[in-house]
Picture: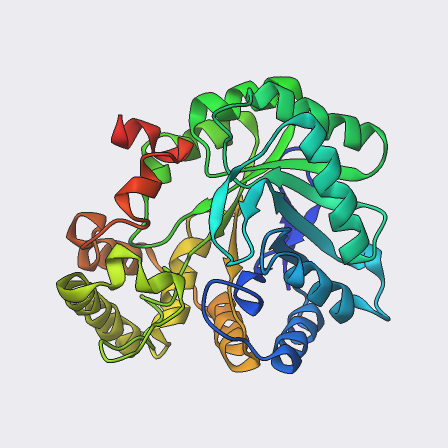
Length: 334
């Protein structure tokens, strides 16, 4: 698999990364054996970036990665960890904590669960409005000096926050949602990152399965994040699946799957963008890897953006209450 430098100051990263959250949290039950087999298959295929969060399954995801990496060369893998999300015993969300003292506490637990003495990329999961970003980044910079963290990333923040953070310590990448139907970063954030030499690790490239080509209106989504996601609700879902059928028609003409077409679109937006594939099964991973062979022409890219416009999408990528508190959405919801 091709690799390239992540941002101006980052490590060499594979063209696709593996988002591991669904193996522990948010999308209903996952099979541990299949999850580990999928992690192994991704690594064997040349994917070296594993994205996790210390709050995914309240530590379960980090322990799973630890198990999957046993017997492998730690230095061949890039582990990206998000921190700061607070949970309760019922798996609910109770807030954020990005204070410097909390940063050092969170990283200590992550090192233990991952079974490693360093983390490749460490990032706050969201902006904590009670803590200046300079304080949070400064605390991570101390961990970089100590050799505990190698690079600093950000997640779901806007241009102003990106600039303030980058002034404290070089930021290697911004993790943010980006797909055919979620293109908000094109308004300002992407340009800021490119100006500063910051890479993009794009999650939600299939919009949580919505534009994978595998979703149906009859699918039951109890105990699943998508049960509360506006895009998966009622008439919104019917509208959005109509858009997916437009993608399916183009994919059929090209002889590829809908998921491969959607991933290929993100890949075509630049080599500074790494799509994170949230596969929980080897079958889905293999399908996603096929996107690397899909080369979109200018005409095909134009046809895709014409067929599926963000303005045609029904519902936000999160509920309005959540979007209103996301720094990356500040300009939209101001």
